[in-house]
Length: 124
Image (cartoon, rainbow, N blue to C red; front, side):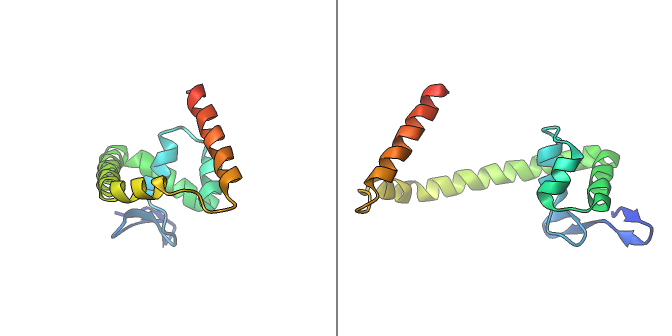
């Protein structure tokens, strides 16, 4: 299950899933941007890939769309489950930290942050 360019294997399966050879970038990382219809040049620059690497990744995704999409949905599901788990585990700690007063000398910065958050929330 690898896409080759000449003799060089470009897409390999690792413990992280389908990965671009020579990197730690999975096809699921690339899928985040493919599904949002980012241009290949942007994705290539974002992950600092060569033209050959991004072409191999996009070609593999297109050639195996159903398989990649199924694995990608599983990755998203597991990521959401982990997010929920850690949010629950850290809820009390986050609340305790949020309740602490600001450190001396940082009051102005915190006030500016609160004003920015209020402005952002009023625009939503």
